[in-house]
Length: 323
Image 1: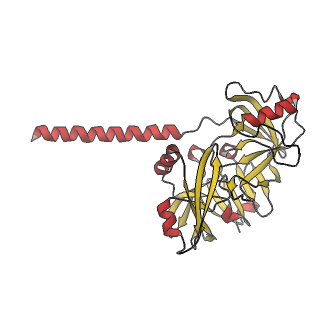
Image 2: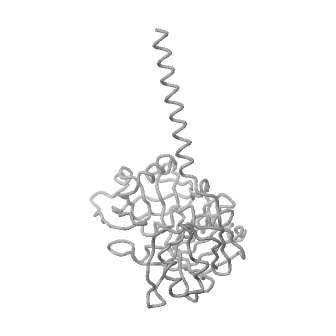
Image 3: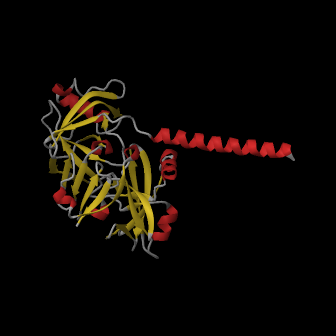
């Protein structure tokens, strides 16, 4: 009897140690590299652009684009603002096209392996610098002949928010980055707690009357709430039509299923109707595991705030909706 009890204790101990080891492994796996961005010259305030495409059928607000200017390049370029990405990234194909058209950029925009060193650009009145940024084999390999067409050179990630406060006015398409949130604006804003652990913007809200931790993902411009298929089925309006959309995320083919919902997100004392709810097929095992380990109830996109102004006050640990 004692022999079998000892075996059982040994097995339970092994399972416990394995579970803890797996937890710390996954936590380490999801930790982003150290933040390389330095932002000087704040506050900055400028007009952002919506970019159509990325899905079939095309969505006029598929991406939220930030205009940037580069040394030696007379053309305005753009970066997709994506808080779902913890680190800012550059697109090697797009940089190659710039080097070919504008030789003055060659020294600054030439990757070494998959890395750009000593990168700099301007965001409105501010200057963004990084000792190094990853350059993915992605982006357009040719510059469009029409200079008014958006030419996207990378992704501006959540690292630009580190220790700062962002005000996104969707109705007027204004992007305002501040060292700290002005008191005059804070007095007219309803806040909920915001976590920035691992440079992921997680906010506390209520969905279906239950507390939820939602990832605010500005890269999910076309969707209100991305969630699991099971939750999607609970939230969908009965007999509502389902829109199936094919899209591409960094070369990975995704299929989304969107339908109408009467549910809303509750932020403090404010109710924000969702309108639609979506689930996605084709995500990677790593993304699915992140969802499970983080405890996230879903990803909240730009769509619910299309006529509102939101505040991402990382410095103050709060997410706000301006009243």
